[in-house]
Amino acid sequence: MTLEDIKAAVDAGQTVHWANTGYVVHKDRLGQYLITYVPNGSCIGLTDRSGHRLNGKEAEFFIARSEDGAENPGSQSRPDGQEGGVASGGAGALPLGRQI
Image 1: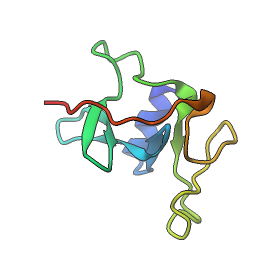
Image 2 (image 1 turned 30 degrees about the horizontal axis):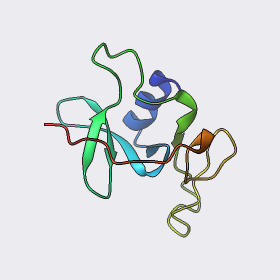
Image 3 (image 1 turned 180 degrees about the vertical axis):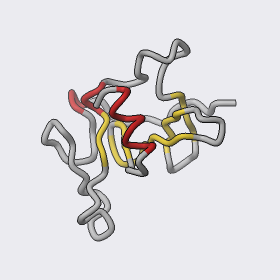
Image 4 (image 1 turned 90 degrees about the vertical axis):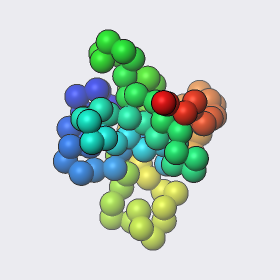
C-alpha cells in the first residue's frame, strides 16, 4: 500500500496493519498517523520526519479482512498473498520504542 492508500483507508475507518496484526495504523487527535504495537502501546510515526517516506515497506501494510476477522482474528489478507504473521523476508515483528 502506498502512503496515500494507507491514509485513505485509515480515514475511511478501515483497520490497517503493518507486518502483522499486532501493529495497527491509526490517526491520533492531533492528526498524526502512527503505527502502534498493540500489546504494549509502543508507537512510531507512519513516516519519517519529512512525512514522505514510510517507516516500513509498502508491501508490509495491509487492510484487515472484515468478513471473517471477528471469527478468525489471525486470518487477515495481505496483498502479497501471505496471511498475517511474519513479514516478507522472514523479518519478525519487534516492539518499537515508546514515543514521547
